[in-house]
Length: 150
Image 1 (cartoon, one colour):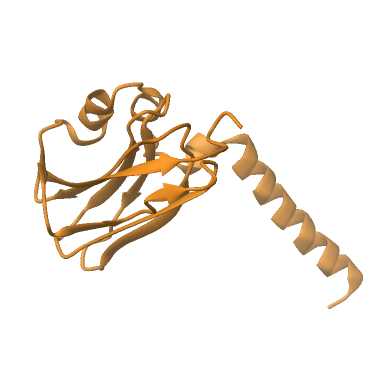
Image 2 (tube, rainbow, N blue to C red):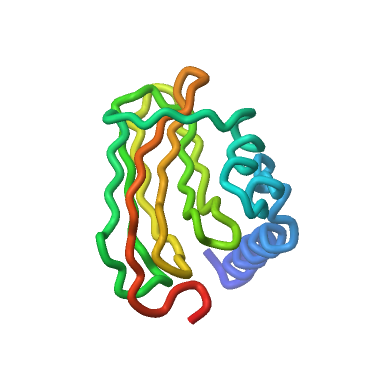
């Protein structure tokens, strides 16, 4: 490869990165602004799943710390033996409770790990959509310092 080919390839890569930055909604077409910006858990669930009737389930395993020393990076994880098609995390007392929605491809093991921001001590809920029903697991996480606001 000569210098010109390398520069041309780098230009193509940087143009693609610029397109991603300029048009994120085109890349993430399934993004639901109403669901993510809604201040009520029930309304966010309605936007995402077309209903908000949930059932607590032992098949949904939520891992979260009892005490989060830094609310800016709280690790959470959910796994389930259900045939999930979507998994969402809700942080009840956050200004916008919906933290993440993950589409689970058919035939794969349903497990999602992430880190969320929490402004204060609150309930974290994992919502698993399976066969048209919503199953949940919840845990209260205490935040000692930090949080969303600093």
